[in-house]
Length: 358
Image (cartoon, rainbow, N blue to C red; front, side, top):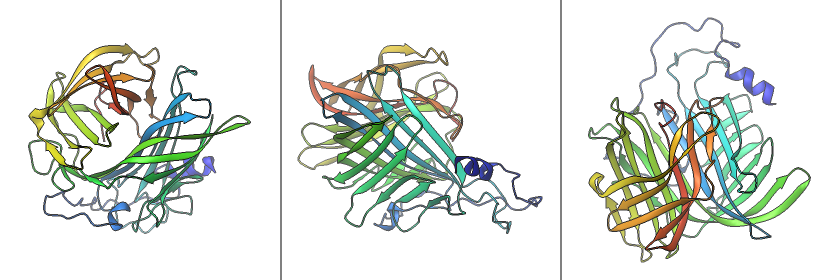
């Protein structure tokens, strides 16, 4: 199955001389659109790019902490849309799964890439239902998510149950990524997911439980010319609140744009303006594989909050050059406020290896 998927990804496989024609016209992202559910849990195939991103903390029966990431990406390539061939790459799907285990000392990771169709891969438009072969992320009618990823070195089989309402990012789901109105995405999060399931490694299977954060985002915009990547955090706070914050960096490493959303434990939501969000490196770690230096420990100013972000472990670099093409750091972090633990989440650092090309 993996071999068949790879063949379907190859641009020339089964495409009899794809005739030149009109490239796709991607719909713009605008502030006037109202997100509606469950429809917007599903795929938006007209847009250039989209992802469903679940990250979280797990605990084994022995009490050992683990971080995990399961992700599906959908891309509509610049390809002649009128080509009638069933092999024409109208939609591409990518998936990543990763496990952060301090005992292993480095990220365990697997990835897949395939064009959609042929019963091998699909991103449904009605609700969250995405799969590549036997990797899948599905939302049930109850609202629970089921994620199953039989990876090369481990298998994650998880149920993620919402305990908090959806959090619309930006202006009711319209999230600016730059000073121009079209530099934006549609974006919502599902913080506070209660996780249960199993982790299998080799012949050993054990029960795990924990908390997670799910992002769903889609857009037609590319990263601004001035930008190289971003720093992003999604945090489940111990008081029941949730915080998403990000900054996009320019070629000199300065903040080009920023933003975020803070929902307090009382449910009050505050949208953070670009000037209210700043990520400041505290400690860096250099990858022994790529030589990339990442600020794995950060100080985050988000509105009235000042938080310290401490990684579960340093080596959480993810090399997805066999799927999405990016090398970045994404890892589990503990959050301190005033020296005391205030929550847990995931920190993503892109554009440090090289400029991120979406």
